[in-house]
Structures are given as C-alpha cells and as structure tokens.
Length: 558
Ligand code: C2E
Ligand code: CA
Ligand code: CA
Image (cartoon, protein in one colour):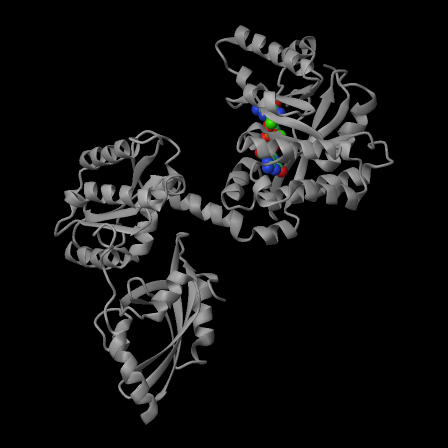
C-alpha cells in the first residue's frame, strides 16, 4: 500500500478497517503538519499533528515528513510522558473529490509505558530530535518548501477575510540549462531569478523557491499587480535568452477559494494553470479556472482504470476502408475506439492525447496492433485474405517499447504476412531524433513491413524528412487543401507531391477525401489509393467485412 492512491470513500474505509489494529491510526498532511479526518465522506483538515508530542512545530527528524517526501515507508520511536510511541509512517495519496491529489501519510502508532532502559535511550534521542526544520533555501535565500508552506498558512490566517493568491512560476525546460551548461550555470540562473523576485517580498507577500526552478508567491489579491509581475517575468525571460538558448519564464495564478485546503493543493492548482496553458505563447501569466479540474478528472477517468478497461476489451478497433484507383477495397486503417459498457463510443481525440501524456500510449498501440494482427489471421484463407490493415505508431512508442521486436513477435504469433500489416508513422514521430529513427524505420522495412509516412503535409518539415527517410508509401493529408483561399496553389502543391513520391518510388494514398471532385483530381494526378468519408467512415469490424466483400470484386463508383 506504499504510495497507493485512495479516493475519499476508500480512505475512510481503510482508516476504519485498520483503526482497531493499532493504538492510533491517523492520516496526516506532514507538509503542513495537520491531521486529516474523514467523516461521512467529507474531509476535514485539523490543527497541528505534532502537538501529540507536545511540540509547537515539526522537528527536522519527522519521519512522516521524510516518508512523504521520499515516497518510502519509515519507522521511528518517540518518547513522551513516560511512554514510548512506535510510529510507522506510510506514504499514501488522497484523491479529493475535485480530482486533485494530496500526498499524505498514514501513521500507525502503538505505545507502551517506557522501561527504565528505554527511558534512558530515548531521552538522548529526543534532545537532538526537536531541532526545528530550516525554512530558508540556502541557494537563493528565499523561503524553502517548508518556509513557504508555514508562512502561507500564517498569511492566510492573517488575511482570512480577503481574497488571496498563490502564484507558481517556473522556467519552461529548465533542465536544458543544467544539461547543456552544467549545474553551476543552472544555479547562477536561479540566483538571478531570485534577485528579480525578491523585491516583492514583504510582511504580506511571501516569495519562495520550493525546489529546482519552482518559485512561488503568496499574497492578498489587493497587493497583486498583474502588469508588474508580467514586467518582472519578461525581464527574467530576457535574462534567460541572453545566451545561445531560448527559454521562457511563466506564472500560473490560483485565487484561493477555500482557505482550508492544504497549501500543497493550492500550489498544485497554480502549477496546473501554468502547465495547462503554456502551449499558447501569449501572456506569461495564466489564471486557474475550474475547467482545468474537469480536464484533470477526465484524464483520471481515462488513465486510472486503463489497464482494467483494456483487459475488459473496451478498447476496440474500427476500420476505415482504403480504396484503390479502380474503386476496390484494398484494406483499411485500424482506428482505436473506446466503447464504454453503456455503449458510448469515445473517439481517439478524447483519449490518445491523455494516454500520451500519461505515458500509456504504447499499451494502447500494442493492443491495437494485436487486434489488427488477430484480424488478419482470421481473414487468412478466406475471401478477405487479400486485405491489408494499417496501424498507427505514435512517436512515443519508440521511447517506451521496442517497436521492432513487438511487431515481429506479433506476426510470428499470428502467422501473418508482414506485408499485410502496414505501419503508419507520423512525420513528427520521425522528426525527433532523426538519425536513430531512420535506423529503426529501416529495420522495420528490412523485416518486410510496409512503412507509410502518415499526415504528410500537415507539419512543417516534411520535405527535409523525405530526403532522409526511405518509406514505402506517402500518406498525404487532405487537411491542407481544405478551406483554403488559394485552391489553385494548393492543387499544384499536391500535384508536385504526388509526382515527387513517384520519383522516390513511393506509392501515395490520400486521406480525408470527401468529394467526387477530389477523387477525380487525385486520380488524374496519379494518386494510387484513397481513404475518406466520400467512400466510407471508420466502422466496426463486422461492417467493414461486409463492405469489403461487396466492394473487393465490384468497384465502388468513383
Ligand atoms: P489519423 O491517423 O490521421 O486517422 C485518420 C483520421 O481522419 C480518423 O479519425 C478518420 O476518422 C478521419 N477521417 C477519415 N476520413 C476523413 C474525411 O474524409 N474527412 C475528415 N474530416 N476526417 C476523416 P479518428 O479515427 O478520429 O482518429 C484520429 C486520430 O487519432 C488518427 O488520425 C490518429 O492520429 C489517432 N489514432 C487513432 N487510432 C489510433 C491508435 O490506435 N494509435 C495511435 N497512436 N493513434 C491513433
Ligand atoms: Ca493514421
Ligand atoms: Ca493521417
């Protein structure tokens, strides 16, 4: 159960189940040293947990704090009022109803009256133990994690009748500085940033460096000036860009709605605002809003039970027909769908980015590849035996799994022809770390797989990539032709792409084909295959089988 995640109801059950087994079982937030209780499904955050030992603040040896920070179980003995307390600190995560996760610790405590020997032993230890924890970050002189949390709690109490803010700032891709220029340079940068943020610090404004490049501020809203912070942030960004690298400093702001929440949760929300919106490069300051929590809840719905959902067969494939120039179905693309038990069909745009972010995409992709391989095996020696299936390979698959090995194992397991399992690799998958990718793609081709470059034309570096990567098929994205004011120019670009593919001995397939005019135009240009709503939408496998049977012999009217 170390680091296990419980929702509020599960945590309440767990605490009541274990309660009789020890003298005390309690849940604590060791960062703020507060005890957490759960009654009838509602969470209450109480006052100091250290006061059990008659202390006024946490000591540097707090084993629950260390367990929480290190994510490892710890044990300790405390001696107090003639008794010895044995404390087992077990780090866990409490998922609050709004989806935010609080790192905390369950303390299992047993006690007995101390013997003379124990009294002598623990007395010595107790004296050294109650030295209080440091509150200052030695590198920058700002408040550290503890100092900020303690200070923020006091500040919120002092200003309890007015709105307050927590602001989280950090450098986008700070790790780059450390890895390119070394830790010393990284430290110099942090000291300079601290120098620019320090002037904000006052009796009512806290400024801290919580860890690495994570800076934080806490203040009453009335003292906050967005313009002034934006100026400082731009100044810091300019400072970061003096060298040969381009980095950005950004801030997320959380307006505190419930001051009872742990400071760590408030800070996480400010971070969430910072991270969620960082893709758009406009303002350097982003405010938290409730929809970010909804996104988080949705992400948890997708990821928390993912393995179970996958095993239960809820992730299935739809197949979208791919049609040759004579209008015959040559095969199809396997596209993932999440089909929930109530019959709702969730499209991939809703879960693929979430799985990519959570590092789970390769689990889904392996599953989809396996379904495709199984399907090809089922079609073998039937009237559908000539069909191929194309599967998608995500850029991240290459990082998480040995794509080459997994695919070879699959074709072997199902005894299928490698040429029938086509691999769609997006150009972004190939663009990162080009040289290694070239070798991997080459390995796949040498092993007999047909490799297609997916979404060609949707990105920006397509031509440079074509120079380096040999593939069998160019899959052209119709997207860049759609709704353009320059229809004639786009048509000529398309024509040039098809011709160029021919010169590189690559076949072409165009996807997103929606009209008869497009098919005629593409056929005249020499495109070999088509995929698009004009012919058919992605469909469940049994429907695809019927469709393919009907249109394998007799062509679709183009
Ligand atoms: P994609 O690989 O480019 O797949 C084609 C997408 O275009 C499909 O959307 C398909 O329904 C849609 N499409 C096909 N014809 C037309 C058309 O004529 N007009 C328009 N407007 N759209 C058309 P879908 O199934 O929603 O998939 C979206 C994306 O999700 C895929 O884009 C692919 O990037 C990703 N995806 C789907 N399944 C998987 C999977 O198993 N693994 C991975 N890694 N990605 C997948
Ligand atoms: Ca694709
Ligand atoms: Ca595509």
